[in-house]
Amino acid sequence: MEVTSISEGIIIDHVPAGTALKVLNYLNIDPATTRLALIMNATSHQYESKDIIKIEGDVDIDLDVLGLVARQATVDVVHGGRIVEKLSPTLPEHVTNVITCVNPRCVTTIERGIKQRFHLSNSERVEYRCDYCDEEAKL
Image 1 (cartoon, helix red, strand yellow):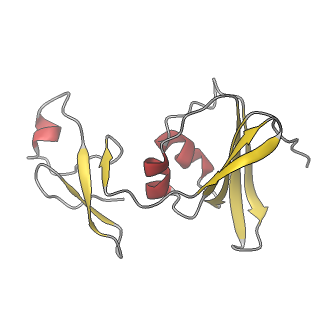
Image 2 (cartoon, one colour; image 1 turned 180 degrees about the horizontal axis):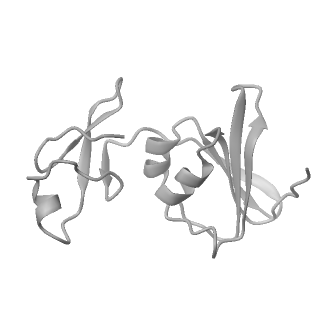
């Protein structure tokens, strides 16, 4: 299989194998309206296998969200057919409207229009808690 290079856009590499579609969903990238290539279960030297997402054009991705759903991923920014910048996502301290609170008594599940905000409570266990009710998030 041959996937050609892109001249302008981003390449999200080292995405955990089989999770590229989930990552696109969390990043709010619609595959139906975005020029992209998905390479799934590619051979990797670091990991057994990986997914790669190539997005052509001007795309703004939220590295905080990427750090939550694919922390080991790398992001290559491509201009003029060359990689001009390499970015590595980190685990975010706070996330908004990415995780949904499961507590049925939380104000975010009762009232509409309230942002779902979570904070990192334990980085070793990757544990997030709701800012409103302190319920642990189910990732």
